[in-house]
Image (cartoon, helix red, strand yellow):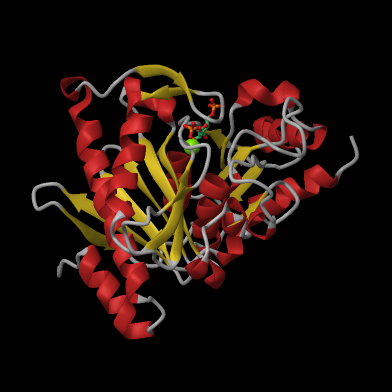
Length: 337
Ligand code: AHM
Ligand code: MG
């Protein structure tokens, strides 16, 4: 089988459809290279002194792991000088990071979660990096970039992707026209195309949710999950399986390959219909990938990609995966308590 590297794939995309601008292609190359560096760092584990916590909190009020900060810096250092970005923003940084004046300013904005599923790091389970690319408004060529420039609905993403550091290191990418999967060949050090046009298989009865939160969910969500658990004798008339990895990106990877649904529902502890997850660097990029793979992504009612963000670190309820199952959840949510 002919091996197509990420570089070749990107150049061919640029030539074929002429819809991949060179600066965006270079930006994706840089992000993918940074993910490679993160993968090698994670693999060292205890030997590299990268496990454990730093004893400080991030903007979300969560204790930062050493790897949260290391991965954040790897992505920052790799992207700052390349001339492809006007600014970047991350789960681990409270404010946006405009490109310093000493470097040329590019056309794009990058938003990322450097390590998703951080609680898995120290117990040797899958974690990942999630990223979203937006076009910077043209006006920023003559002024400083602000947080408001980032607050674009997810449907305006020009690219989205994630890397998973698991039994294999994989990269999944979309430019809004299909979803493509790559696997890291560690000996050669390159990403190799291993799947074109990934499509979510239909009909797989499997849900991913943190069941320990159910007392905080809306009544419709509790009923949906109760009916899944009731199995073939319940109203759904089918047995459902459950999986929860503690890393959204790994759960989404499973759904892309095997089908099913991922839920991080509205929670009464969070105001404004929000759950735990972040709109701009978790729900939006993974929502675009899921939609491009033939699935659906909502907050239980609204399409994720249509939600106008009001702040960089905004939280949102998440229901995404196989279209039929996302529609089933919407039916329950609409029921009166
Ligand atoms: P993180 O980005 O700080 O790691 O948090 C996001 C993660 C998701 O990957 C995952 O689905 C969820 O938090 C797990 O939460 P829980 O602690 O409820 O299992
Ligand atoms: Mg995360």
